[in-house]
Length: 114
Length: 112
Image (cartoon, rainbow over all chains, first blue to last red):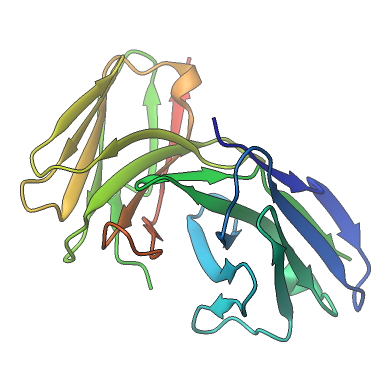
């Protein structure tokens, strides 16, 4: 089946630095990928929709200058958290649409900003 | 915007008990999915329902899509510790669009 590989699975960074998270579709092409943020025991909140070859679409309240999304190829989307602060610590998950009804998810990235 | 409200938010039960999780909305969805997520992992798809009134069974799990396609339920029979996790419903308002909304989530703990 369609697999999305997300790296890194865990990252700890210092406040003020930037962190890049990669999401790759391994055996299919994904023109659209989605980035979510999740707090402990809470649901996934959609941050942005990443479109190959064009600008990402951000949900209301998400700072596009802080969460930079690049979707330069049909198999890779990246999320860069710029000038990270402790409040950015969270679980970030990407997903890609597969077929009409299917969505497949990466395994997530636990970001801790110290 | 959370279009899908799940209840209960937290549930702790003994092994062997039955339970039902509800997913409700005022909006109509072309399809609805249920996922289970374990800590530190991404959600894993359990089922997709697309027809109003549809019922699907997956071993001890029974999923139902409301007749009006606005709500859904997940019933677990004889819960086991392996059922522990975060259960999420998710709906797509349109068939071909990219909008996809997650419910508020239900954290289930099954005590041995």
